[in-house]
Figure 1 (cartoon, rainbow, N blue to C red):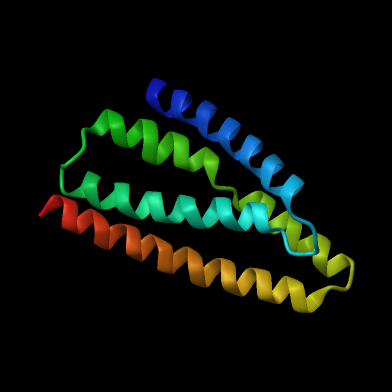
Figure 2 (figure 1 turned 90 degrees about the vertical axis):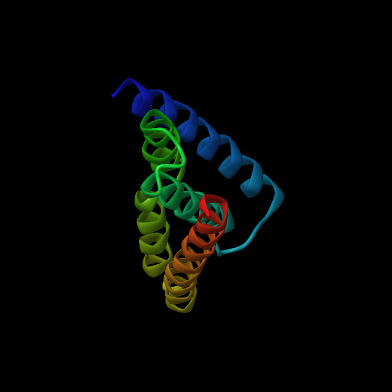
Length: 122
């Protein structure tokens, strides 16, 4: 549990700082910060999951990085909140686009990460 907690602390801090930085550099209706964070997190989790399943990384590293860090770094709750905000502002097209590309690219990036993980474990 200690490894999950330590990883979670750093994942949450990274998400907060990166999200703040991206938001300061961009503008518009589309929440690009959360999108980038969730997509990169999906990629890393796909990679780490394969390495964990193939016993290429130790259990403590999986708990620290996969469960703790990436679990806190990615953010489904913020994704949901931002989608609801767009719907409340009657920005339905942006909300549908955001949900669609987030799910699509999240799965694609997790898949690409897992393919790279398979290459590393071979």
